[in-house]
Length: 93
Image (cartoon, rainbow, N blue to C red; front, side, top):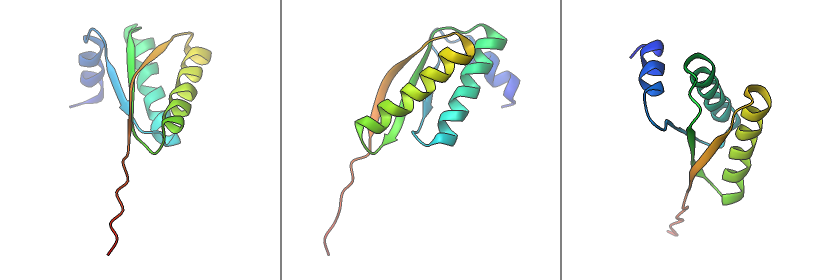
């Protein structure tokens, strides 16, 4: 799907959900998607899921960094829908 078609389709959702990971490049990508939806399509009701967090604190920090950037640069707000933690399982051999 071409980018303009993707953003147009996402803008028609009643509540678009952006899924990202806590790594800085992924959070930056989530910001860019939020910016394009907000600026080009006037989408205001955006939800975020932070996936593959190693701790709850890591997920909260990633979301807060994204939310602060969106508030500062776009004057908009986003909501955190959920955090998903990685459950490490170590197998002793």
